[in-house]
Amino acid sequence: MASPVYVTDTALNDSDKSMTVPANRRYKMMGGLAKLITSADVGNRQIELRVTDGTNTIFAITANGTQAASLTKYYHFILGTDAPAAEASDIFVCPIPMGLWLPPSFTVQVLDTAAVAATADDLTLRFLFDSEYS
Image 1 (cartoon, rainbow, N blue to C red):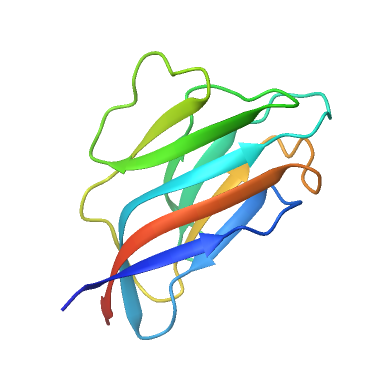
Image 2 (image 1 turned 120 degrees about the vertical axis):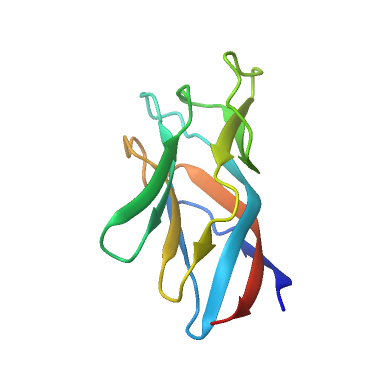
């Protein structure tokens, strides 16, 4: 029987975060929120969510816009939705597939693929998963 698991990573000074499914569990992605506060370092950040088996990318979704320096933006990872053609000024909507169960040791990674200010930008994550014993 599945039960909800709330996973957060609110440590600062990092623009690349990963969450790993623990041994003997499997997680079903239900949704998540990433918040990126960018430093004054010039450059456009590109946020991407990746699901990997530890080595290979199984699924990836890239936000349909970039984020410049000195801004705060929110990235909503929502089940079974289409990304809108235009985003609100501080919100990106990123679709994730329905029914995506992740086995033990799979990872969910959210990162700035441009790595503009990898240790100065502040990326925080809040994700909800269904969890069951594998």
